[in-house]
Image (tube, rainbow, N blue to C red):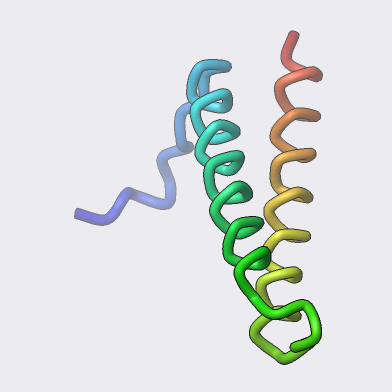
Length: 72
């Protein structure tokens, strides 16, 4: 069932935001491990792509932390 676009989504609790932050941290760890397994001399699109994913995850984590700080 799709949510009704006219109905506003409930505001996430701090616990929800903390949970998402923890999940992003786990993803960051996993991506860092993947990057670590690649040959450092091999600067291919795979490594560049994983580094880009890492960058975006770090940005998402920063934004979540900003939201949490503003709500305190």
